[in-house]
Amino acid sequence: MDFAFGPEDEAFRQEARTWLAGHLPEHTARHQDDDGRPAPGRAWERELGTGGWIGLGWSPHRGTHGNRTASLAGQVVWAEEYARAGAPARLGHLGENLLAPTLLAHGDDAQCARFLPAIARGEEIWCQGYSEPGAGSDLAGVRTTATRADGGRVYRIDGQKIWTSLAHEADWCFVLARTTEGSRRHHGLSFLLVPMDQPGRVEVRPIRQLTGNTDFNEVFFDGAEARAEHLVGGEGDGWRVALGLLARERGVSTLVQQIGFAAELARVVRLAVESGAAEEPAVRDRLVRQWAELQVMRWNALRTLGSADTPGAPSVAKLLWGGWHQRLGELAMRVRGAPATLGPDPWSADSPYRLDTLQRLFLFSRADTIYGGSDEIQRNIIAERVLGLPKEART
Image 1 (cartoon, helix red, strand yellow):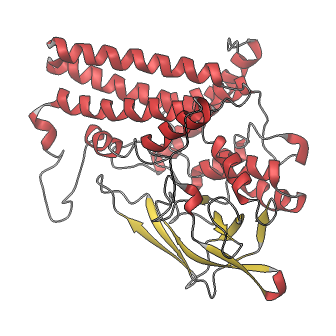
Image 2: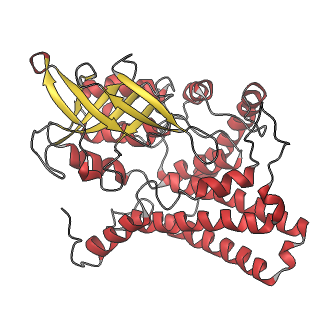
Image 3: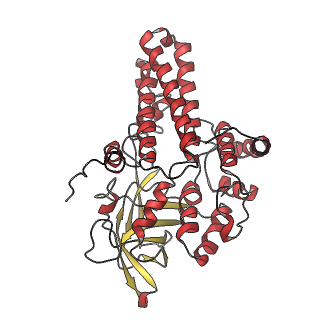
């Protein structure tokens, strides 16, 4: 795919850059994290929605939702400018980039009319109810059940989800549940939309990470009371819907991620130069290797962007960036040397666990080869679906 940006794309780039320059400083002044960077939040989501920047890639065939539309190149332009401006991480990412395209492909008109405008306005936040304690990378092992109730008008949800990003912030959760009693593996699953505001019926328990943050959660659904009214794609068709959604986890967002990676790498390079660590041949070789591998990842992402679905391409991308980011975290600690073991502030009872940016990078990146499908699972997918090797025996 030729990804040279034309005059229209560059005009769109200037529009995006101007909007971000006019809105981001004011948001940052009001909402900052501990490092002084713009903090994510509902206020920023609503500001993006008011500006029409949510849902640029949505298909317009189900009607307009108050958002702008952009070509694939335009979406890349917006993503690049957003990342380069240092704008906040998105609370609305799952709703905008995963659920909305899934509804456009598999939902009915009433579901699109109900949920898409609220996502486009930045008013409703979503989380993803896929992984379970016994079904992480092996998604077909889902055990959460959904049973028809009230004359078939609703489902009662019973089970547990884990590693649910932003569940503590979300208004809704798209849940993969087993609706056919006695079904196994990918059979008998359904894709349900579950409201999170069900006190006593849906319980969210934060999981504290190595970094000290609690972005991940456990979610418990009380089978007697937790309810869902919206079924997407038909009962028992959840596996097809779920796989369609997972295919959308890559794409333009991968390029955004890589711009963030480039900023992290630049920070490590500056530190290596300032500290003299870059004078060590082994460190210098690692820095150059990290830079070269990042360029390869970008070219690969551009090469596959917008092309017909290529079996194994998302798995290859996940293997590349997961290992790369983990190695960057390790390199950051090597460049820091012994001071990497010390926090940015003296210990106190009020702030017993403080990390600087590179320490958080190192600790969080330990999970990069596990979440989103572990490296072992990605290699199995490539082996079975691309290379045609015998499938791994499963019980």
